Image (cartoon, rainbow, N blue to C red):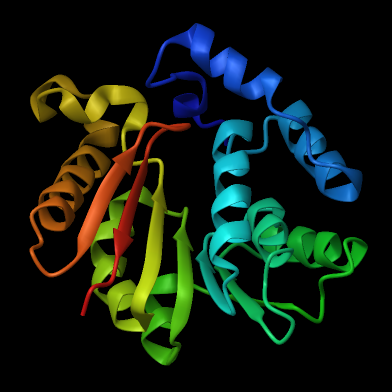
Length: 222
């Protein structure tokens, strides 16, 4: 299903266009996978977010990564390239079609031995995991973020980082809930609850990054 928020930039459209065209495309099969998804309108992270995630992972060089929301495997493949030699990435998706597509793409990119994909609902899978993880990337059902947040913080190493994607909803989270269509009010309410919870949490360090539809980053301090 087409995600309309992919086309509602939260910064100047001219800057979004610049970030998406001025930054080099990814080489090889990873770049082909990104182009394929964009051509068909498959909701993957936009190029400016992908470049940021690529830079961030190259900098911290994580050993263990958890991803919530696999889609066709683009972001997992991107992050897995920066794993330490003995590192591993675990990704969760509840849709069988996405599971199969991602599995095929991991094989094509030669990453099958570095990535484990779990088919299931994250609400049921997360409590079964023990971690700990250096990095968790969450890009799944937006209304569930606030539910997954405590589990993510439990699974993170101290000093680990949680990156949550699509937290601005094209800027509409600033609107009054009553002005939003009824079909998106739950997402609106739950995302605002997430912001209030994370940004006011004195136990961890957090920041908002206006890339794509917005990133919320949390560093586990203790």
